[in-house]
Length: 169
Image (cartoon, rainbow, N blue to C red; front, side):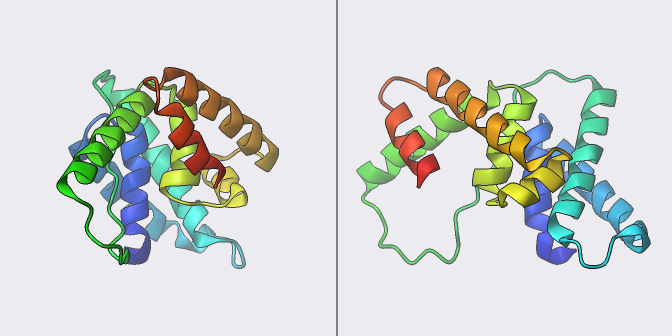
């Protein structure tokens, strides 16, 4: 489970409104998953199964808390990336664009945030996304397409092209 802890936390962040709440949901979900291991179907993919438990726990916590604060998303830098450090100007522009993207993403409906988060932030396949969200694979495709349209329409002018090229690539 330690192997999937970060992905579990990012999943919880997509649903919960605070990092502390996401951490609590992640911890509780990991404990629940541990006790539910006997119900895990051998031969199935573990990661989507675990992330579904995390998503359900996160939704349950959010629903019971009744909070309506801003969404907190964390984007982890890839520690394996071996690129040269960007210039300070490039880093500032990249940070501003990331903040604008996350802010825009936070304004989308939960089902749009979840499908985009699973596919692009957590890099799940369509099949894994379907399993994690408890929907059909075809639904992932159509929901992702609509979610990206909503994201494109809500992005600040000039950003939509770069984001959509990254999504297509």
